[in-house]
Length: 176
Image (spheres, helix red, strand yellow):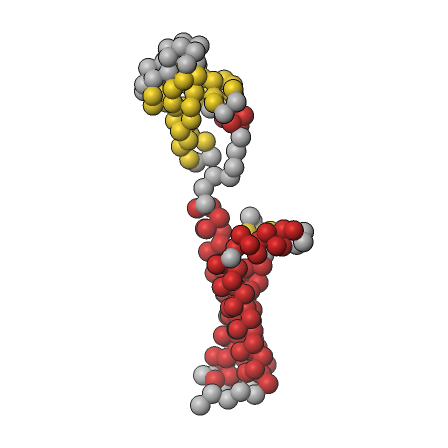
């Protein structure tokens, strides 16, 4: 059966605390992230907050230690080494998953001024000095924007963003 001596109690504690806080971090990311942001606590490595991978390490350390003592019948030192290896793997897995999640959230916020100089394609005709719609690719995503121009621009035409007017972009046709 399962023995609960001091070493196992520590491994169980690490598993429960690390796993529980990691789960809370995943579920309540915005709340917890905002709380740490308000306290000015936040170390980011490669765009990923360091807290989730550390919690992954602690949880996997607990799992590795329990596997070491219960399955492989290792002493506390050997189980701790196995826990450390499992923790390092857990750190890497959680870091990798959070990196993928951060990248999949889409492009970072941008201002319309960032689009000046970018090219796009008209999706809804733009009458002279009136409004239409353009698709502009920026930061790996296509953005549908309201646009104005000094000349008539037909749908499907290539345009270049030359400026910003409020929440709209100013475009001009690109000569082919």
